Length: 406
Image (cartoon, rainbow, N blue to C red):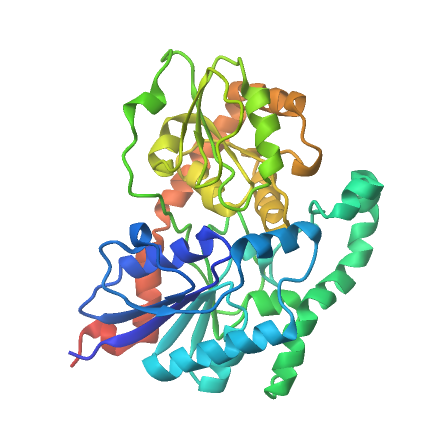
């Protein structure tokens, strides 16, 4: 039987970029698709039980890249991107895939085109050039702390085009070298012949997008670990509050978060996601490195996140509101969508105080209307099965594999 070869290629700056592709790849029928996976590191606990052909792919150091984002610096220079393309071309030549699916691996827009292989990008719809938005929120750039949020918000819209040009310039220089036209930053993020949105359109609407742009629905992932009984210990009359800032949240924000929740009539559960535990942990908190976030979210009154879509969507899929504490622009965009839907509260990480956290926690515990809206949105999340939609899309693109024709 002929199988279609699919190469998944992920940037490894955050865990989310790997696990979203991994979640989609895991559910593909092995009798129809030959799966190849390229990323910087293959953690055994993540890839356990898979038989994918693994291809090590050179990637920027994650902590250094996140530090650059925090300072408002560019992630990539020309030499880095050229090295990315060379690494990808070598793997593409070895695999000879029928399709490439990438997550935040922007250089694939060049290597896939040079190799004449169809390519799809997995990217949240709030980054789309066709996104329906009222402007871009101001991230926690160091200049915000210097001039203040109000002044930054006033001048940020005027500076945004030049900021985007600055970040797009290195890849455009390399695109020109390969005979490809320049692209805006949003076009670079939504690269490829196809764009796959891991979102629901009611939360992150787009307008007038071409048919090559497809909503898959949220792509859920949670570690395969048990939900220990001791994490839920305490007075059952006190609601669960699930807290995790993930691998890319502002580390300095965790102190005000736990201080603001200290002493409230809640049962706090903190997942560190491999980061150091806080020096002080309130008596009403339990802590673990990793937890099954999907199961925990279903039992929570609300979820505290770094604002990003991964845990935010996990909470909304469970029908509970979100307290987002974003720092980078991606996280602010996700929380902008969640806030516009009336199912979350955003607090700025760069100026976070325990008093703000406490007020927001009380609101989220008591706001019945917000809880109702979150429950309604959960029904829409459940109606879009990303695996069914992804495989249906693949079947239309690679019909031989879909039919099982030899």
